[in-house]
Length: 407
Image 1 (cartoon, one colour):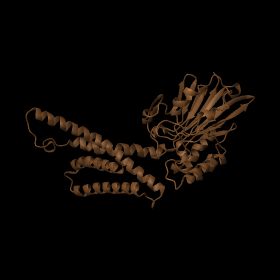
Image 2 (cartoon, one colour; image 1 turned 90 degrees about the vertical axis):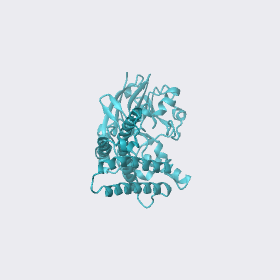
Image 3 (cartoon, one colour; image 1 turned 120 degrees about the horizontal axis):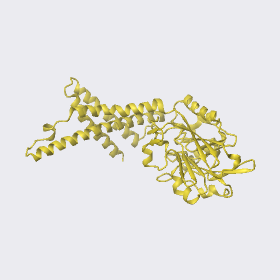
């Protein structure tokens, strides 16, 4: 696989170099520019080969993360240039075909039909667009927390719970943070809302429990009169890290469960809690991660449901929104509301009024905000943190406040 990636990198750089040659053909120091261009390509290929085959143990995880980010942005940007060059080649091919139809025999496409200097310049300028956009997302979007409020009507909600507020966070990914002051600002926004119940729907860390260490006391301030409840996400199990032993991986998960307890969050691992107010009850169910595709399935919804059958109103915490259509709605139509996260809204998209678009919607039917089918509802939080790309463009980090009301 690594060899295919390296070949693609070389081909992308070779293709973009065609535009560089057109633009610099009359420049005095064009050869120096060409040498610098290919030297950078060789350096990238060597770094990736070393990284994949032998690892980069001599540099910190933070350095590795930012090196990877720089490479990702570089080649994503170059793909924009490739689009313009493909358009240019398409036009050149069309002209060549037209000449052939007229009986002319051009010796070579390159000599008889030169590249468009305009499209070559446009391709290089196009590289700047994603760099500027993604750069802005890092500087402005990563910690631009937004409080999103929704009124959720539940017909069978007990009168004692009419009007209660649920505060939800999801996908904290503490291992990605680089600004504690900004994170504290997001936490303060949630505290200011004074929710009656606090709920967290998974992915506290990226891979290791140690990542949350310096943020543990900060998130411990998120509490509520009727309790703080949490569940696990796909990243919390350490499945994406190479562990020295199965015992070390298991210990990491046990340590993470202890962190939830130390923060005052009641971690629900395929179990439920019954909340009673003035003699009336609602059930809070929590399952471990369960979703479609390649993600590991640790959840047991039937086990989490057991014991809540007689409670009229049920709220489920389940990290992956695909769980709703695949198991929750078909098997448990009396679960009134499910809270999820996981998608991050791809950390990229457009939200203007009621219009929402993100690449995430091509993977997940429910990827952000409130959804309803019959009498069941699902809310998908856009995520508090970020993963991979340390920023957000258009889909901003979210603090959710849900007001439950009777019909």
